[in-house]
Amino acid sequence: MTATTSQGTRTDAATQLHELKVQVARLTAQVSELQQAQAERTHHGDEDDQPPLYSTVEQWVTNYLLPTFPRPVGEVGMTRWHWCEQWWRHDEAVTRLTALWYGWEQARLQMTGMLSWLRELDHQLPILYGDDGPFRDCAAGGDLWEQQHRSSPEVLAVAAPENWWRWWA
Image: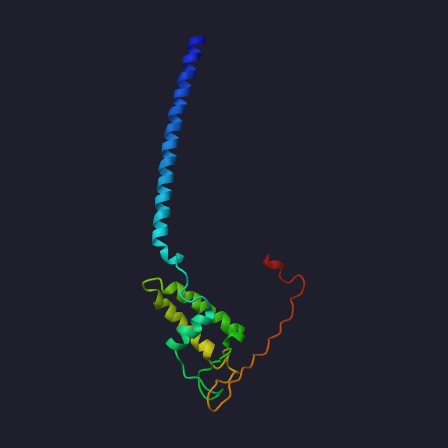
């Protein structure tokens, strides 16, 4: 009985060793596949690792947007486009321009990325520069008119009743 038990133990050990070798081979293959996939992602994702061309939204607005997409701006009520030289004081404008800048930084790295970005720009410019936009109360600078910045009045909000949002959670 002892010899049989000893031989059975060796067979079990050999079987376990074989199973472990198979598992190690399978895991090694998985690691290799994952490493290859990671290398491909890194190679194809190089655009994600590139630093932005413009380091701030102000730099992008000043050096790219305004020179590339000029619009005729003038005194309030005299033209369809409104601009404020102190655009950075208008929270809505900063938010919209920052979103456009981020989108532009991504789009410039893609072969056809500018197509969709230009559609977004075409949507945002009339909102930014329009009669109801954030610059509607500001006057453009120039020889005849002194540049004026006027902040838009804040819109008030009343807090919801205590349990109002309970249904949401």
